[in-house]
Length: 362
Image 1 (cartoon, one colour):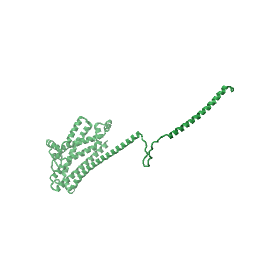
Image 2: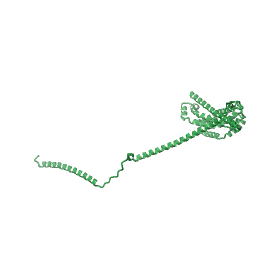
Image 3: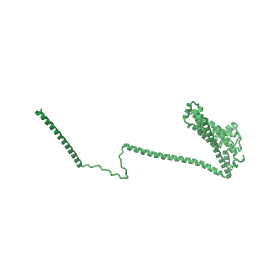
Image 4: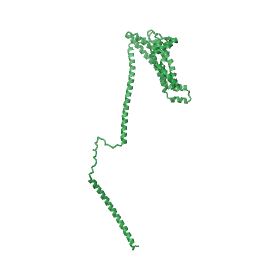
C-alpha cells in the first residue's frame, strides 16, 4: 500500500489542501485588517462636519430632556386640570363670600331692628305700663294676641298637616293633587284685606259671631293654611322613601307608617311651619281689625272682641303727639317681640317633648 503512487498522491494533496486552507485564512484576516484601516483613513480624510453641539447647561438651568408626544399630552392635561382647579376654587371662594355677606346682612338687619326698638323704649319701659291697671296697661292686648294665636293654630295646624299628608302620601302627582296645589298657591297670593272682608261678611255676619276672637281666629287660620301646607309638604319630602318601604314590608299599615315612621323625622319642618304661621298671625292688622275689633278690654272667652298688640301699636302711632306717646308705642313693640319669642320657644319645647314621646313609644 505504501508503495502505491496513488496513495502518496492523496496524502500529498491532502497536506497541501490543509496548508492552502491555512494560507487562505491568514490572507483573509490580512484583507479584513486592511479594509478596516482603509475605511478609517477614508473617514478621517473625508470632509465630514459634525453637528453643532448645544452649550453645556449652567448650574441654574435644568438639563433639557427630550419628551415623547404622550408625555407632552400628559403635561398639557395636568396644566389644564390645575387651571380648572384654581378657577373652581376662586368661584367657590366668591360664592362663599357672597353667602357669608348675605347672612351677615340678614342677621345685622334683624339685630338692628330689635336694637333700635329696645333702645327707643329703654327710657319708658316700666312694669306698671305693662302690668298696671287694665285701662292703661298692655295686659288686655297681650291676652287678645295670645288668644288669637292659639285659636288660629288650633284650627289651622291639624287641617294643614292632614292636607299636606294627603297631598304627599296619598294623592302624590295626581290630578287632584295638582288642583289642590293650585288652590293652595292661590290662597297664598290673596291680599290680607280680602281675607278681612271675607271674615267680616262670612264669620261675623253670616254666622252671627260678631267681632270676636273666634271670628278672627277662623279668618287667620285660612290665611296661614298655605304656609303650613307647603312647609309641611316639603318636610315630608325630606323623609327617604326607604323608611316607608321598610315599614310597609314589615307589615305596618299606611296610617302606622305615617304616624310612627314619617312624621317623627318631619317634625322639625312642621315646627318651622308653626313658627312661620305664628309670625304671620301676630303681624297681621287688616283682618284682625275687621274681625277681632278694637275693644280695649280683657277677653275672657273666645266669643268676645279684643285688641291685639299690632292694632294697639297702630292706634298708638296714629294718635301719638309727643315723645312719650312714641315711647309707649316702642314699649308695646318690645313687648310684642318678647311675646313672639316666648311663643316660638314654647312651640319648640312642645315639639321636642312630642318627639321624645314618640321615640319612647317606638
